[in-house]
Figure 1 (cartoon, rainbow, N blue to C red):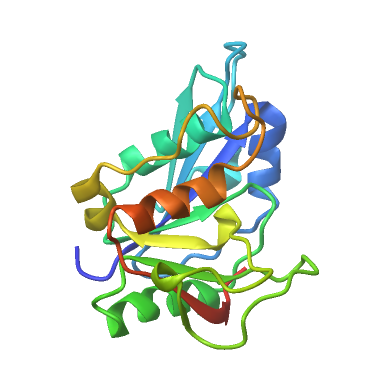
Figure 2 (cartoon, rainbow, N blue to C red):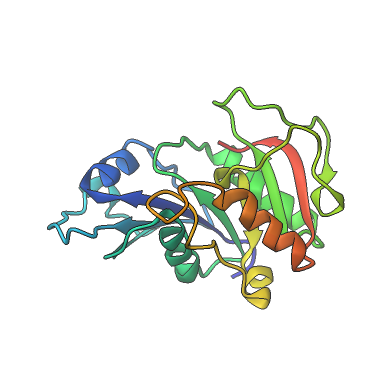
Length: 196
């Protein structure tokens, strides 16, 4: 499966699935959308027609906690590269292909951090190797994280399920995830490319 990308979308309940339909996910060669849908109340969930596509996989799980949701999506991935996503983002074909191209052209990169347009967030204006230290005022958000699935699998890295929305600690799962990747010796690099 050379150069394939799974976009891992975490969502919650019927309303979440409606938000995913509004993402108007572009159909891109080699790109699949893995939607992990938490449904702890065991409601009857009807899959919207817009999401019954060959490039969309929907997995319904009976649990709470954003990190559990992210880990479920990761476990379903079959691609070379994964991109972490939320249910309220917009992607273009060019942006998704830029993620794939980054990994294709940088074979030594395990984890790539990108830019998200929509926050008044300060990003470095050049490529930065995060394994050598975090730039001043920079903090990672999960929807900026993409990684080689094989690298994560080799190190057994997951999102810490004690952290994140609906968990014991309601935040901080993103920097913790990146920190775990760096600690494990993975090559983590920031690229000043807007991907969503």
